[in-house]
Image 1 (spheres, helix red, strand yellow):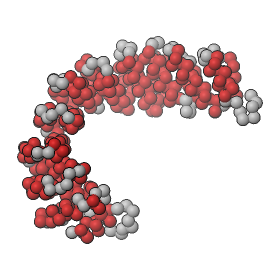
Image 2: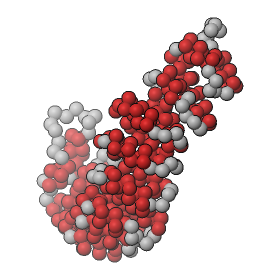
Image 3: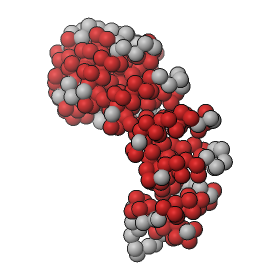
Image 4: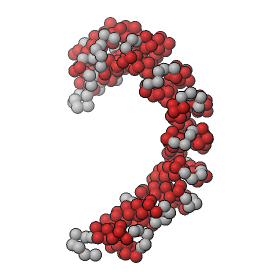
Length: 358
């Protein structure tokens, strides 16, 4: 068995010059007899195969758990504690869950060692969440409040939201734990944004409290929205009252929109009324312009009303402009009044040509 596995891994190693393409790990494992599973697992869990055999080991253990779950479970429980054992527990849990979810969960719950129980429960629920997310959520919510529970909840909620976002959002809104509710609901609304960004964004504003979770949801929705319909996303941002959320959303929209069509992004910016949302959005536009058109970036930066942001963006734009066209940049510096004298003097002196001439 060891020779067969070593030969297979050599054929799958890109560094090896092999004229025969190896079958996929699923096909190779499928060629084994049930009586060979234990011997193959013994080879693949040897430290010499820890990395090179990781994918094949995972495939083998999941397949073994689908066909003979109790035998697979008994075998891995004899492994020494450590990362490989935890990975093996997760693999058996996923394979067993595909065959019999209730039995897999009962097995995971019965494991006496928390180091085994946590990954087994987590990955059994991951497997269930891909097929029946709402049922997986009900079980996951009753798990102890550990990091694995939240990752399962967020994954399952996203799976559900991709199929029925309104139902998933309604469920998430009823999670008793307030901080957890905000984080899971934020994920659900971001996923909803793929299907109906306007409704998802409005729901984020209505149901999430101002703060990190709300910002994350809205920014994620705007990011996806900007890829498909930046004009409508811009209309939503423009209609939103000023504040940190609108500033963050506007800036993110401009970053993405300017990559697609900087002229239309500029037109949208010019339609915004003066205020913090426009300042944040213009600052983001300046950052995108600086590498390829610093002269235009300077003009846009000068239009920012908030003094500190205006000075910072103008300084950055002028520094880049001096590396591209020092003569014109210095002529502009000599007459402009938008920068503090100390910064203007530093830029004039600090960016002189190496021969010291102007």
